[in-house]
Length: 179
Length: 179
Length: 179
Image (cartoon, rainbow over all chains, first blue to last red; front, side, top):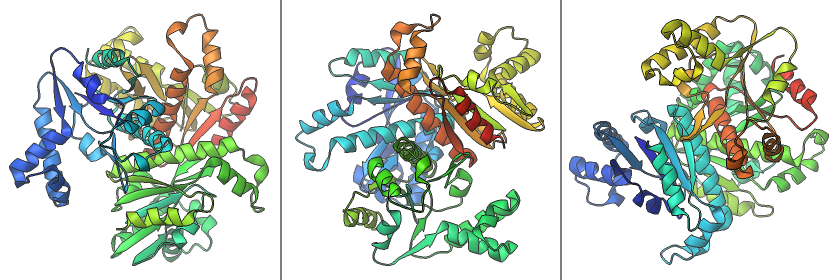
C-alpha cells in the first residue's frame, strides 16, 4: 500500500485520476465514515468527530483491519495534515500508522505561489483570511510530518511536485512508486 | 492539557501572561526541579543533569504522574528544543510524551529577524557567537520537532507568531486553543 | 555512540577523517554487509536489498547487537536518508533506532549551492537530472528526519556545516560531541 497525501490546492485528485493499471484507490475519510455509519449509525461526516474517543479508535482499528485485507496494489488517499483552528492535525498519527502495512508515503505539492493563486480563484474558499505565508507554513509542516511518518514506518517518503500544466509528469512519478 | 513551547526571544512568557480564564499554568522545568529536590535532595537546577539517568527517568515519570492528576485546563510551559553545544535537545522526547495526556502542542515563534534583533539588545546574552542563520536553524528544527511530537500524539500542532507590537493577537490565538 | 550522517557531497567523509582520539568509526552499510554475508552468504551489496524482509530484519538486529557490545566511544557512520526513485528512505527507521544506544545524532551538511556545485564537478554523477532545488529538498528532508530521530531517542540533534575550505572547523564541532 502506498499512502498519497496532498497540500489542498496542489491538485492531488487530478494526479490520482491519471493513475493507470491494477490499483485500487481508497479514500480514508470515506472508508472511515462508512464504518462509523455501520457501527454507530452516524449519518453525516460532521458527526464523526463528535463520537467519543474510544469509538473513534474502534473505527480507526476497523479501517486498518479492512485495509489489511486488500489484495493487490492499493493507494490510500488521505490528508498529510488538516489545518484547523487548533493547529495542523496529522493525518497519520503513529497509532494509526502502526496498524498499516505501508510501502511508501507520498506528498503531492506545488509551489506555494501557484497553490495560493489557485486557491484565490476558488470562490468556495474564504480567501480573505489566508496569506501566501500560511500556504508556505502548511507546506513546511506537511514535509516535516512526511519525514516523521517515514521514519516511523521505515519506508520511503516521496515529494511529487504538480507543476502548472504538467500533471502528466506528476502522475508518471506516482505510477513509478507502484512498480 | 496544552503544551506551549517557544523559540527563545520570541516572547512566549509575555504571550502566556495574557492568558485568561480558569487555566493553570505549570512550568515543566520548575516542577521537575521541585520533584528532584524532594526525591534526591538536589539543591540547584544545575545538579539535575548530574543525576544518574535512572534517577532522571524516575523524576520524569513522577512529573508525568503529577500532571495526570491535574483537573481542569492546564498549560504546560516547556522548551520545544534546547540549544546546547551537543545539538538541539528535544523538550518532549517520545518517552515523556507517551506518559502525558496532550490535546495540542503549540510553538510560539516570530520572524527570525525580529528574534535576532531582540536578542542582540539583551545584554545578558553572549551576542557575539550567534548569527541570524543560527536563529533560522533553531526555528526550523523547532517546527520539525513540533511535527514529530504531534504525529506521535495524534494531536494538532499550532504555530503562533508573536509579531512585534501584536502580543494581544498571539494571546488570542492561544486562548482559542483552550476553548 | 554518536551517529553521523551527511548530505551526499557535503563532505562527511573528510570531516570524519579528521576526528582524533580514542574513537572507533563503524560504517553501518559495511557492517550490515559483513553480517549478511556470514548469515546468508550474499556476495555483493546489491544482493542485500533482495533478501526477504524477515532476513533483512534479522541482519538489522544482529548489527544492533554487535554495536551494543562496542566499548568506548563509537561513531556510527550512516545515511540520514537515501534518495531513491521511490523517495527518501530513512537511514534510522524507529525500529532500528529503538535497538541502539545513542548519545547524539549529527547531520553534516553544507550550503545547497556549494553541494550542487561540488556534485556538478564529479564526473561519476549523472549531473543532468539533478537541480539545485533537488539538493535543497533533500537537505530539508534530512533535517526533518534528524528531528524525528532525536525526538524518538531523546538525544540532541546537531547540524554541522562543512563550509568550503573550513573542514577543520567542522571536525572540531564533531570532536566536541565526543567529549
